[in-house]
Length: 133
Image 1 (cartoon, rainbow, N blue to C red):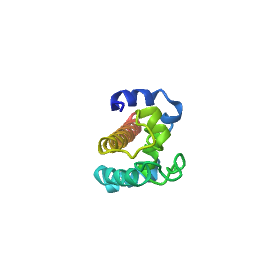
Image 2 (cartoon, rainbow, N blue to C red; image 1 turned 90 degrees about the vertical axis):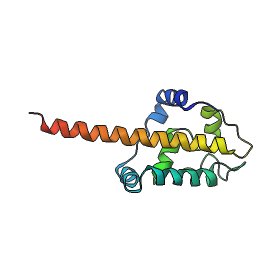
Image 3 (tube, one colour; image 1 turned 90 degrees about the horizontal axis):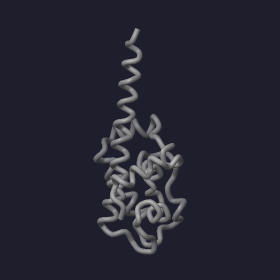
Image 4 (cartoon, one colour; image 1 turned 60 degrees about the vertical axis):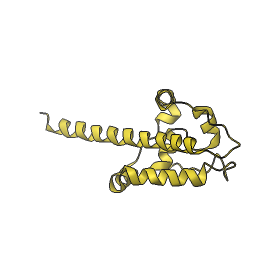
């Protein structure tokens, strides 16, 4: 399993992975529910959609919008077993064990924290720009 620091450095180099951002609706949901609850949603979604030995519709099971976790999954390459193998070094063909599940949820949670921080910094910069003469 790849450590998260090296994973996030590699993800920064992928034009496809870098393009994912939370929209206004997903950011509002994240702020309303809070990171702990959204992370719990991530764990539930991973347990149901990604962790089984042979996930149904693998490669197509993760929507591209509608929930912050879905967007985070694409941004962190935790959207399907093929991406998990390529980016995280977690092979397909067996159910994810507890450490692998925690790794996936950890990657999603880290991306959500970083995305919320980035969005907050952008809002702060915009407010400061409005005050400049």
